[in-house]
Image 1: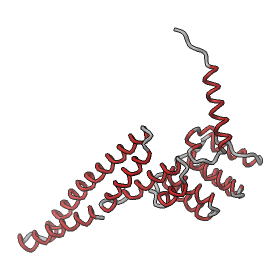
Image 2 (image 1 turned 60 degrees about the vertical axis):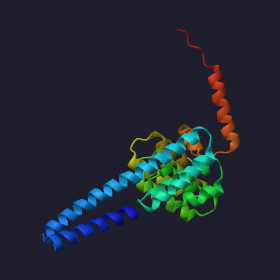
Image 3 (image 1 turned 120 degrees about the vertical axis):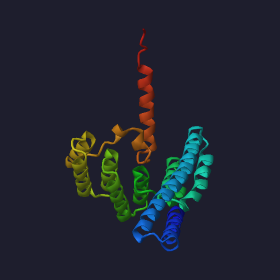
Image 4 (image 1 turned 90 degrees about the horizontal axis):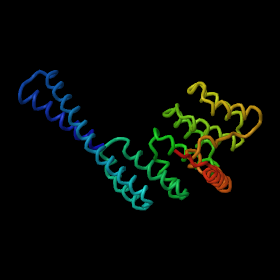
Length: 243
């Protein structure tokens, strides 16, 4: 990446100048060159990440205003910074893929999700679900494994992993995943309850995760509509609190 190359180049030049032109000892020259490399790299990284952060903030405001296509365009333009700094490419593709996925444009979401940043567990989860729907179970499992490696403290991720395994007919593997999840999150009730459900031959219950679960589009539309109607009905039955 450009930040690294520029920093290494500057450090190499100063090392040669100090050692051969100035006549300093090699270890002194190396120390100064290393210090220059560190400062140069950190400054360039900070500059690039600031630009990327501004682009993501602008895209976020566009999303809040329902200007979805503008948000995607803003993020696509920010991809030009990916040649400068490591991980920027994956982070931006994660965001674009998630936007397309949330609007159920799965064909456009997929190529971006494939390039997702491994630490973005939501994007990785969406990619794994996409592999499941495309009957690519091995890739689904590999994607989930990478996701739980980087985000082992996310309860929904472990439950989502097990849910997809259960959906593909691997109930025993789903139980083992939930058992692993409990080791990472001891006492996590939603993992424990779903593990018990599978052990009793029942279906997993994901409703407690709310919108975080619904964003993966694994519930039928009719179920989502019933949940929304129930929520609206509950709101309508609430009593007005008088002061």
